[in-house]
Length: 305
Image: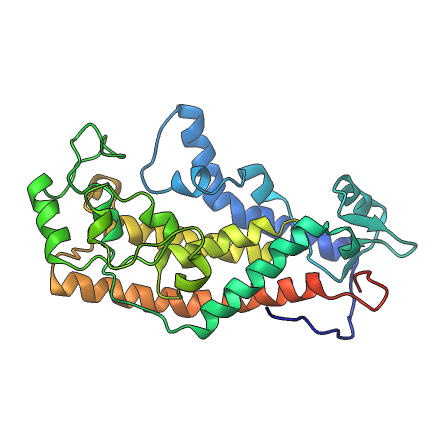
């Protein structure tokens, strides 16, 4: 267990003009991703790549649009009282800010678990040899009716997909990907991840583990600074695109060129993406760890600083 240490806390004061500007900038940043999604939803149109970010990750678009400053930021001006609709905020004579003492014990337990997980991942070597085969394992030996995105064509028939899976080496370390493997694919995986083994197996080279930084960011809301939440969402979105380009689905009609991981060149391209994403995720992981540490710091009287 990682024990947080006390530190002197500096408060950042934002005038109404300053925080309104940051709030509007956040809304505009999120619109580029949220507006197309909501337009598709209005039309009843499904998208095999982007819908995942709003169905698997259960954070509503309306919540993503909301701006929060993060801990130790004081919002000045009468209009800052709008944040009091969230119970995590408090009003002082000087303005409105998050009140860390309102973090319930149940959430503190989760924050400590998350900090331990992220710390273990940071210390563990990244693995870049999975070659993106998890999406292939999710359709391995399935009938056309069973395939999840069966409205979209596959690049290979069932035997071709099976050959790629069986010729490769399934080595998925991420439980929430592994649990979607087909029954015939499960015993082919080098690891047998479980919910309980997540802290022991989660590693920094995994696309899904790095996408999940977005999940961890929104699970800490509204304490998460919105710029961190948006950065994690942006990374998750880019990873999701690569994930599906490396899949057996043929999505060229949606302008997603395949990454042919069934070839040496494709596997090399996929690994380069893994390494780039891992570096970006490392920086976001550090910011999430710092947030967890801040949420867990208490003074000797048991109240958050």
